[in-house]
Image (cartoon, rainbow, N blue to C red; front, top):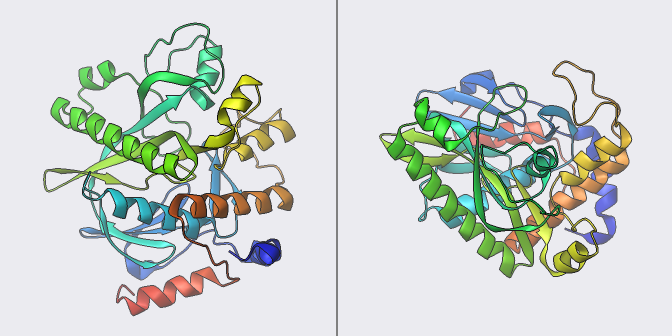
Amino acid sequence: MVKDNIETIIKEQLGKTLNGTNFTSLGELYTGKVRDNYIKKDIRIIIATDRLSAFDRVITTIPFKGELLNRVSSFWFEKTKDLVKNHVIEIPDPNVAVVHQCEMIPIEMIVRAYITGSAWRNYTKGVPTSGIELPSGLRKNQKLDGVLLTPSTKAETGHDIYISREQILKEKMVDKEIYEQIEDAALKLFEFGQRYCRKNGLILVDTKYEFGMKNGELMVIDEIHTQDSSRFWILDSYEERFERNDEPEILDKEIFRGWLMDTYPDIFPNIKPNQEIPPISNGIKIELAKRYMKSYEKITGLEFEATVANVQQRIYNNLKKANYI
């Protein structure tokens, strides 16, 4: 990433962000909050768009976000493939992952090492997260004594709902043996991610994992340790800031959630499913793009070369070259 002109490049890309795709020949289209999924037989082609979601709504688009997310996720999938099997077949374009079509397990496994975000908001209201009662006297952003697993249901739209381990097993949402494999896999992935991030000066605060089954085997799917699915804090400044009751230095999109709540307190965090999205300033979009780039570089140790481009055309060309179109 060329530091002295990156803001200019981001500004030029503001009008070229990838809001969505419509490659009908790829297969049946399923549109998620951030990714466009094309399904054909036993293959799924996932295209990471530049859409940004917060509070379970798609809010805006951020330049280079889809590429950066897919690059980060691909990086982690490669690093952890011998730890937990994943669904990746190949990466034909920076925004695209070709993966195995799996039977999705309807549970997201959220792993937490610190109390922050929605878990903190629940804590202040006296509401357990996934049925877990935490001790009194905790402070926001405090490191927990151990790692918490707080599963939630996977909602197609609207807010995901936290659910207890006991309820999942009682309602037989997931077979007990498979659920225990999910817990084990999530803890292994999180421990690996924490260690890797720490050596690069980051704290992996919390993250979510999704899983699926393929030929009787559990696989981690969707994304892993990205800026959308995880919180990252700067390691060196955490302790000092925590002691001063200051917010940590952050690399994830939590800054955007904060901006939304500060700018539109009457709308966020309780925005309704069909409520109109208010205007989003270019300033916060540019800041977010820079943070996504910074976190990519800090996590991977690689430089990101930002280039103004027609993303959709490049994706089409690369999918055609790889014989998917």
